[in-house]
Length: 91
Image (tube, rainbow, N blue to C red; front, side, top):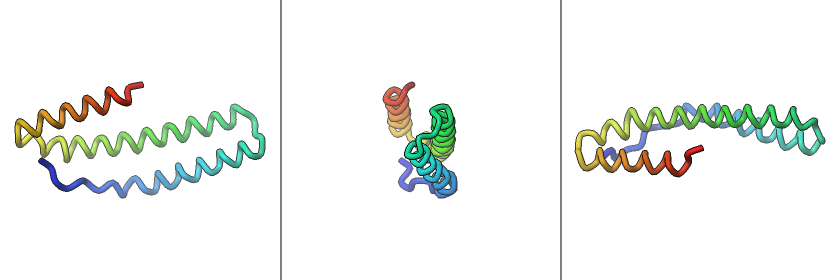
């Protein structure tokens, strides 16, 4: 099974921007800004988080899942792991 996790540091700038966006949203709420403006910013954060999620999933598939295919037992475990992940967070 794949023992070393891939590095996800390339996502840090985007996560830092998301953190800044969250702080901005908090400030908008404190200032009593117009609801659609707040909602617009929340949707932007959601899209940014989905992009980070997609990047990490892609790397997981390319490295962790691909490595597991060297062993039939590991492959089945990874497939079950992915199914459980998607079942758990299915929207």
